[in-house]
Length: 144
Image 1 (cartoon, rainbow, N blue to C red):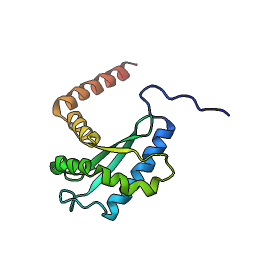
Image 2 (image 1 turned 45 degrees about the vertical axis):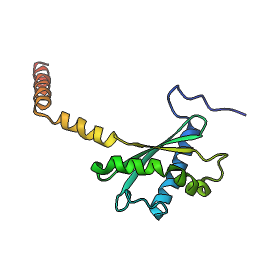
Image 3 (image 1 turned 120 degrees about the horizontal axis):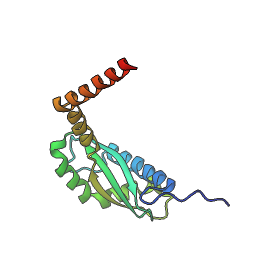
Image 4 (image 1 turned 90 degrees about the vertical axis):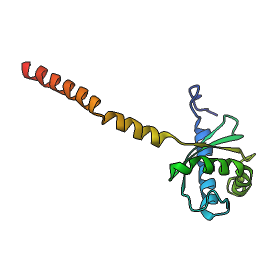
């Protein structure tokens, strides 16, 4: 029986990625059906961006991105408070697993980081510096 090559340290294995995606779909289904009713979540749209599984598949870190970022702390607190309820509700969808992972919710800041980097790249100082490099490249091409 051939085995796949071990993943690099710090990199999720194919199994972790597959199980994480399974958990993400099950959790999204539970939330979309409205089975988890918390006053802090009423009327808020939440995106489950990614689920990162531990190596033993017993813990899942769920990265969530609320549509309204000003409410993110309350939403995160509500999700972490109801994690055991959500875990029990998604159990039938992932019944093929030996154990249902514990859920920990974290804020996904990747979109905010992208916006911040984009704003930096569009700042006048960076545009000016990039403009100077472009002119230098044109001079080099003219001499050739």
